[in-house]
Amino acid sequence: MERRDQIEALFKGLVEGKPYTKKIPLNRLSISGLSFSAEQEIKRKLGEKEETLKDKLNMFRGTALHNHIQNLVKDQGYRAEYRLYYSIPHTWHYMGFETIDFVGVIDLLHDERNEAIELKSSTSSDKIEEYHKTQLASYLKMLQEKTGREYTGLVVKFGGSDVVAEEIQRDEVPKYWDTIVRRAILVADKLDQEMERRDIQASTATDEKAGSLYKFETSD
Image (cartoon, rainbow, N blue to C red):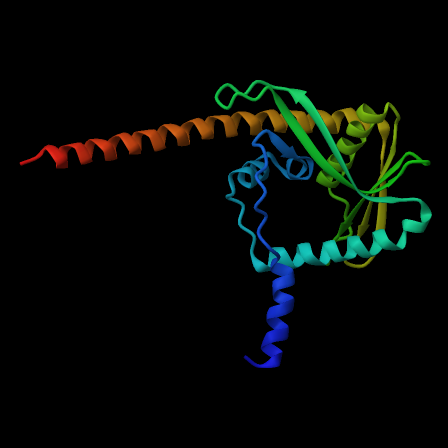
């Protein structure tokens, strides 16, 4: 293999990354996935969401930009990658869970200013999308539940030709949070039904295989 090919393979491997093998409970749902759509979160939880190299390259660019910005603002009192968890009651009739557990990661959090910032990037669009605001508003709700304090939230987007920012109004938070909760319940019920369907299908296939073996063993 030529050195050029080795270098290409090295950096391509950085983009593709390593598969995530840690088992995550089925009732733990991603705020970022739910903010985009219930369908995407269902596919993600079922392992059906396929990512092309182009998708991974875009993600790699965004992650690299995030990491760079987070390092630049450390001396201004921001904490990077602040992980949040929050649960709501919900009965999973087949799987037996009693909650839906939300997980989210705030890009930048300033405790003294009670300020949360969500970073977004795009090579083609300067527009802050509705799902960006849904995601950050949900983090603000989770922060308030955890700390008892109200936080200011801003989405900052490094777009195709500009850097733009938009603040989430506090009176908007309940609306966005209701959207997340409704989607989460839909996702939970769909996943619950799908797990039951798959188990029934697997059990039927096992019974049919056992029956075939029995016929083979008892035939003349």
